[in-house]
Length: 637
Image (cartoon, rainbow, N blue to C red; front, side, top):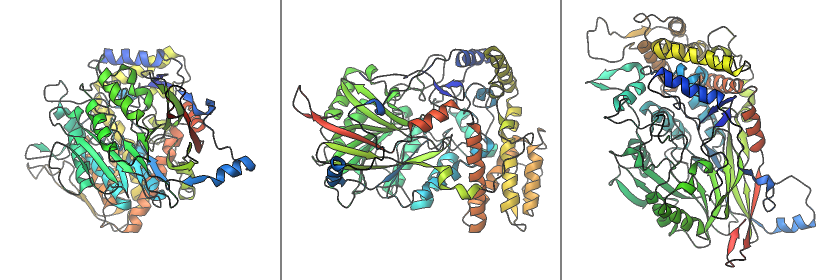
């Protein structure tokens, strides 16, 4: 069975236990329940050990950079590169916060789960962090995104993600980029799938996603992005045309084959599994493929209740998806290597609890001699190299970090064969701060007390992290209750750092003669006397308006609706191809630096970040294949 060292147990970050980084784990139906959840989170923490490290395995060797002796020289002479390096990234979690206020994934929730609301700088700069990583990796022939591209799962988030990915090298494919969906890609805040009959139904989801709360013909202008729609949209980009069926297996190019299922009624059962041939090195003696599983393919509807399946805590790969993967593997040459990947870490696959038929299918896949027991995963926002067991056989895991929480980095991945029994795995960690260091040398963070410094945005739980647990719990619960009932006020407070950060960006990047028009209540069809368009005649006017709205909480003079619409319009201006490229690039730099420095400052003193940096630094691992004394076949160790 799979070792589940901390499967289902909390992952520690910044001193608070969280489950799978989901921002909705504190969702409850009453404040009393919210407080109870908080008590469990803050007072019921247990010490958690990660899975066994590869460092402890005798047959897996790290590259320690020793000068090569004769034995090593002999090994080097037998080396043959199999693949060119590719880029691996994940957990960008582009976040929509400009819609209708929620009682739950709000400042109330942030008291118990610290990534419910990230800093305003991280929110408006999420795409810039992604763009910087993509540009840095542009020379690599393929980028694989291992999920949680978006956060709340809104159309606006998905559009921003796909636009950013395509800015570098166009639509997805074997020679550009691919996506393996995560739990935030198609599920409300990564844990929930609302439907019409639910208390908080799909209209609730749509309203949360509706930027500026604007409507047209009775429908929201900015809607939700449920799993069936996300898979369908991705397929359209990948194939270059609309899909013809709700379920199919096909090859979309020489390098990518896939199988998918789309179910509009049972959206949580939708999936896409992809098989991609990795770009070959010139000396490659055999091909290497990567199988991209969709680990958010559930038999039961995920929901956030006191008892229920939560997509942020538990992976799911249906028997249908595994069967589809087995079919895809039939087209792979017999001498190939096949690597596995998916969003959730192996601890959350919970394979020991799978039905027998499903486990047998997975066993059949792992028993395929082409399949190397090496899995690349994401989700933890931390990263590391781990070793597990499944039915007596080892499975090795590379878990990669995130582009939303520090340490911010992506990884490269390449494979090299040594003889016929050894596979070298190379994966370098590319820290965003290191690769763009001169870019942000002139960045100065906001002063404390300004309303948008990192410390100004901390929850009461974080402010009291050095206090007694009881005091910390009381302070955070009191704050959560206040924000729960005054949730519109909490939304004003949440948007304030975004408005002030964008005011700084506009002041430095927008030309003095720029003219910006926006509709404070959106393009709604009612009396023009009330719903009118505002025109700001210069960059200084825009800056002044942003700062005015940031410091105003009047229900009609400066509504959340107007704030959302102005933030949307400013954001559109700086990403618009009609805006001068120098202006766009300076705005990108300013947002990037603000997001990068804010993420780093938010993690100062974090034991989790220190551990993540330690666990993820090694650049080489080695797998060896030895004959089994039981059946004489070659098995990876």
